[in-house]
Figure (cartoon, rainbow, N blue to C red):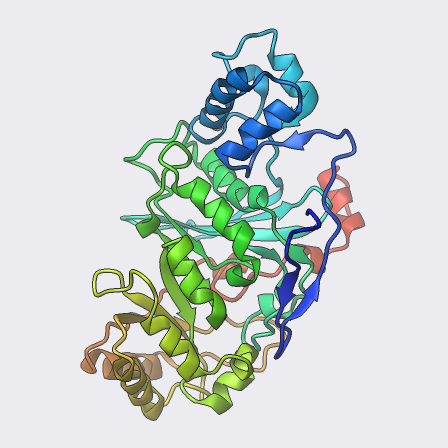
Length: 398
């Protein structure tokens, strides 16, 4: 992080508070090439002593090997002279987050516990379906929004994930799915949702940089129409997200009254429902073909009444929003004060919204048995001590 890099805003319950973090520096001084733009990669090669003309060619080759073929070592790069590969190895690394643990649910959902170079743990989830495969990507270690129904929200925010740690999640998933080299058709990993740990719009610059690599036709090659960014309602950043990233928008709404949303999504005290819906109505690129998704977790006797459903329809129509609603059965976790609405209540709520002319499918919970379902992500580092994990990794009993 340079002296010019803006400080990371943390909203807490109400107001953003700036905080700074010391830059990550490897002990061996090597620079990681993952997560850099093409220009940055070329400039780094020149800075290390490579001639400018050669750096232009080599950066294109390295970019292709990293993002198209999934290379993790310079000696795999067969079109780069053998004599130059040790020089690259001396100065640079191709680094991704470390995989600590991988779990597979009975329904095929996969969850990975990942670790950063400075020892912080976070998670990502892959959800396979018949016609698509969706990777749920984290943007922060922990979360600062304190949404009371969300297990992830009970964690403290540790830090923002760097661009290489965000794009690295997509690369690790491709490793596990055997999807190198990149190809436009026949992929299992077809969609990305920025719905993992953290609030993406409070790590905007790093998320934007990572997603531009993911969307680059010479990079990981996923269309922006296959990427959705979910926010709890960081209103000032919503327009910028549409202008600068251009992906689909999802909004964690979860309530239709100030009183209830203030309780379950405390950011509402800073940016209220009306302000949020105005920002959504102005979202660049939103139309009936690219509707905004409003996520709504179903909490028994809290936000699930017929009156709530009718008010949801009224609000979305009042702001003329091209919208669909995802109804999410609450995924229980130990210590939560909430219960999931009954299936009958969820169906009744869904029917009212559908009758109002707005699509309101009920999301099928996935990966509950490995705590990979919506709202359940919370790193196992908080459940097990580091010493215990080290013993397990070494094959010792605890």
